Length: 370
Image (cartoon, rainbow, N blue to C red; front, side, top):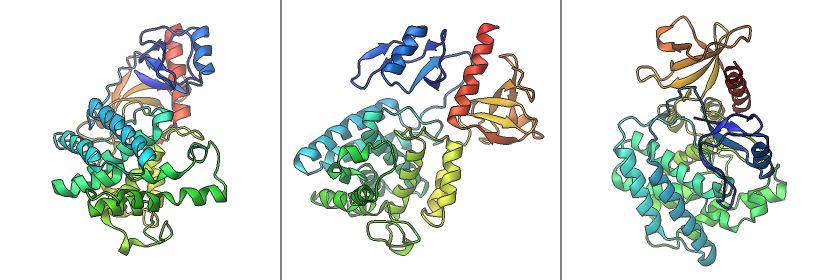
């Protein structure tokens, strides 16, 4: 099963997961075969992507946090966020309860590696992003051997890092194009607004407050809201900054598709030393799989291949299914390669999400018609 843009779906593909509209109504159920009417309906409802069943033998890695834990944390944070909209106050104890559940899952995982991002629903972006930034931040905290108390403070601060956005008009937050100067000035207020809201609670750990206030500061002093540099930024602020940027890059937004892990890490490395802390970018690199299952790449022999499974012995040389040769001819479906056993072959290019999905759809269509 893999995710594909509705721009690339075709008749005969089989739905892998239930497809719902923004109100949660089921449009198509898992197992239904796509036809022209269904495809038109999906596009009419502005469904951007779906999961489809396939014969690609993709083995998805075990998630670092259980889906049920993430679902409960997201629902709980949404209630917390909505309550804050009404009262102007946050329930820190509720947030800490969800943070504790996430910490428990992470601490029971011996090998924390982030693979392909899950699809995030557009209307739930704020809540899902907050939970994901919390998870990423906690992984970085664990990599630094933080105590349970420090992890709790970091987790609370990272989950609440964008709480100040309750004061920003939705038309600005969800704008599908570039912000005007005036709109960006409004957005830049959210760290201080969030800090002021959160610090009204006596339960908020001090370090958590700094994570909220400082997650948009840059180590060269060119960030906001105060324009302080590395020497004055709290460690939690440095961590949440890295987690915030990474999750934003690997998430679909109204104005662009999500970037792959590989693309996101390349962009983050360009920000290292000016915007982001090298210490925590390096920590992130140790826990992100650059080539998770579902990645499409071009090899040094000019073959195009799909990553089907992580290689425990070498995460940078995964197991592959060969798709097309140098002349564009499709390989048989069962033509596989363990890149770890072919040291003479290297990865020369990782395809972006649009190009990868287009080639996967083409490969599946060839074998369907053949």
